[in-house]
Length: 473
Image (cartoon, rainbow, N blue to C red; front, top):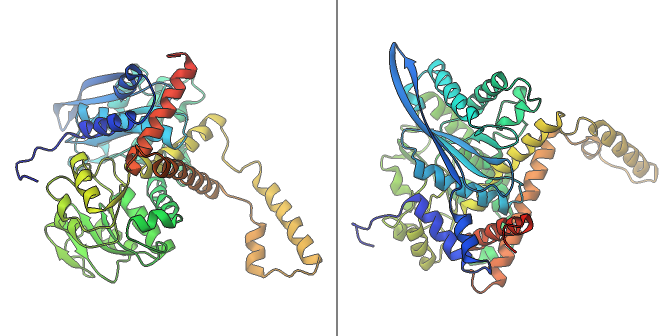
């Protein structure tokens, strides 16, 4: 690939994938054109007084489709965010929700701001003012448009937004459902913080349950012992790496961050690396690994699984030819460009796409939204009844002469907690979605990758919604 090759934009990458997937389906061209486009975008500019001087900020909230309400998608705080990026992310959200059977349409928000340049008090004023502007136009509303955390935002920002909404809409008894990803004490749900990273793990586990798929990636067995490189130790990368290391026995042999990369063929203790990064601000000079200043070059190191979990476009036409991973698991949005995918496919690299693997966050956001609208914690009415029933079953087993060890007896007696129910629901959602997309991949001769299979399924489900609404016969 020429050094002067011009990469396509993130939005162009998403739309090109859409076009290929739509061509495998029997839906009217006009409907496909409508689904691909963004329905509406709201741009807002507002001032905030910071250190005695007025500063202006610009942001957007895009709604891709409205075949189901509310529209759902995160709010991103970044100095690099743009309207084009917000529109592309909104489209991806529609496809993700459809693929994993979450009854939302897609939306996304972005504000041009660098959170690292402001203290907490300033960020609160900026966040609340941005929320105020969006609430005025119903771009934040539990029945119409529900944001969530994204790059540069988290539970803290969602709590500020929910508080701002409640102040403006005091008569809305469902006000806590106006955003998801809130702290548990503010109407959030247990398991939401880890949801996207754990969804990545559940997706990988399901992939490894199918020997035919694993063999295609020139791998065998399960996740245990697999050498993994993780790019980005933010929320998604941290939880994915931590769970893979602690629960699945995988080895995280390299971690790539903004200030370089560290490698260790024996594998890292992710909790230890995360603590170091928290206190030092980066991973440079981490004592239990080999530091490489050119972190991007580590994307080209040999490994079984490469997990890009940060920005879009990190694997592109310039470096794809050098990538040696056997399996790429897209934990971020759009980390592999359209042109790079063509190169990697030619090399025999298998990719599990972002439209599927990154969907864990919106699945658990759906659970949180349901919790907020039902005004009751999951398991509150059933947990103790389940425990009593389980104890009766255990007593019956033991009275029939079938002894049960104390450890197993304790586990059998326990009713499901909210966290366990959330993880169970997430696991089920990820399993079912992969089974559907792999079936299409293996049975449809027109579909040549998991990405096209996932996109085709999403388009088909959205088209069906419009048909049932009477938009087309």
